[in-house]
Amino acid sequence: MSGELAVEYRIEDLAQHSGATVRTIRAYQDRGLLPKPERRGRSNVYGDSHLARLRQIADLLDRGYTLASIKELLDAWDSGRGLGGVLGLVAEVHGPWTDEKADRISRTELEAAFGGQPDEQAIAEAVDLGVLERIPDRDDEFLVPSPQELAVAAELHAAGVPLVAISGHLRELRGQVEHIASRFLEFTTEHVFARYLGHRPPTDTEAAEAASMVRRLRPLAQQTLDAELARAMRRFATRQLQYHLGTEGALESGGDPRRVTLPAETIRAVEGLVGRAHVADFIAAAAEREVHARTLDALTANGRDTSDVDQNI
Image 1 (cartoon, rainbow, N blue to C red):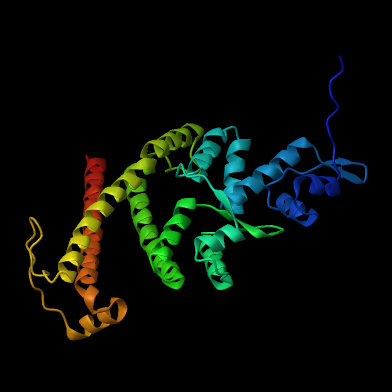
Image 2 (cartoon, rainbow, N blue to C red; image 1 turned 120 degrees about the vertical axis):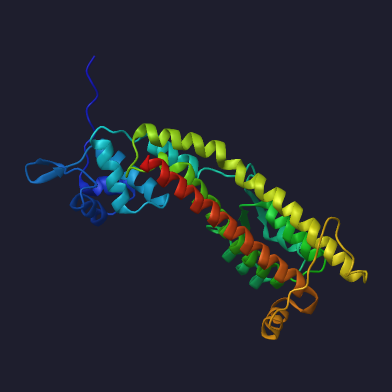
């Protein structure tokens, strides 16, 4: 039984099969990302290995890697260190961080969910925020990455919140949540992942162990945030209720509020941002965020000091 003949491509054919341009293929060759082709007379011949390499590069670019970091990974693979663990880690990090499934919604359904009137500006804002995604060649349907988030917006609008206020609130909330996510990742990277990802690139085994750790730690941020959000919502909702019932002087269970003198300019600036009724809540929340941030910084610093002591023993 004869073996299969190896597939051969001219550079134009390779470009067509890979989706890369001829110019891009030549640029990858010049940067050492793609092996040189075999010379046959006056022609350059490429094989399946070149096609596979181009697809790997495209996949890593889609995942946010730079060409320089891709070259390091591919060099490690070519030297026999392996890429299986690294690609497994990439897939673990870039995989879904929620069980929620994306859905689709028609323009008619969308308008019905938000009062029945078309609002192109609101749709454009939702697309800009990523709440909706346009589908190529479909003007009457949208992809909804998070149906839950869209449902919350619809409920708020039905309760009387203007769409512009909802989008503004989401932008503000997203910035705050991204800060929390960043701090959690900094914390876990320093105290957990540094041991696996200290090499550039990590070994196959180190990357596989880091991927396993991502799976273990992934739910922790959500669980912590859920608990802290529930605590904060109860506290501030109680304050709001006390204010509107005229009992703002009443003490929360276990609370010990104290008066603090603030500059008049600060009070006026906060009033301009959130309104007079929400000044106390805003200042309390800002102070709590600062306390949490400084506490985490102190814990991190202590961790570094302990690490330095251990290394000097």
